[in-house]
Length: 225
Image 1 (cartoon, rainbow, N blue to C red):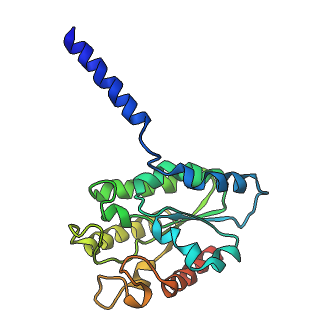
Image 2 (cartoon, rainbow, N blue to C red):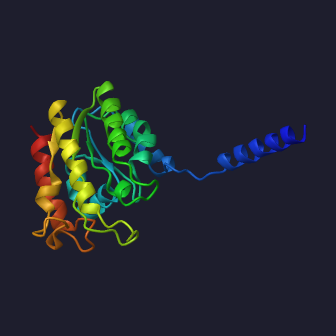
Image 3 (cartoon, rainbow, N blue to C red):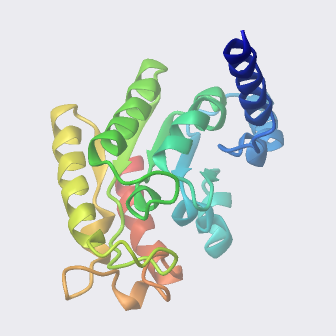
């Protein structure tokens, strides 16, 4: 009887802790904006850019790219594909875009939320693609950007190899499934073949204005076709 009581107490404590966990996927970040977008008249040119800090910082670094084209930014700094998948319906599907541009996995490889598992990260990306296509949304899949290291997690010493391996899988998957594919990685790669070209970044992970300009030129060729 005592063991049963202790087990019940443990379950109660666990349930209480889970109920008070912060908004892990950060649904609240775009909640109000999503309501406004969803209420607006349908736009056949509606494009959502979905990702992490690389996408999050884009509208503030080059706001004209978004405002002049009517693009919607749905990046959240620090997030991994596990969080992406949790909020994909809220921040993409429910907005009824024509196109979603997915840039992912930098923070998976940096191990922000989980130890890096290439198969699970790849699976998370595939799940997002499948959800989008099931809802009639055209997918533009993009490569993970180059990075030789992460200052916030120096224990990760093989980032370039993991990024290259994942990008190869993404390219193969895109070809097999007839997805639009944009190779940011090759365009932003430094001469050392491992890092983000310093012309396009000040911290080795996030693009600067010149880096975003390169990305914009590449992705617009695909969006506009």
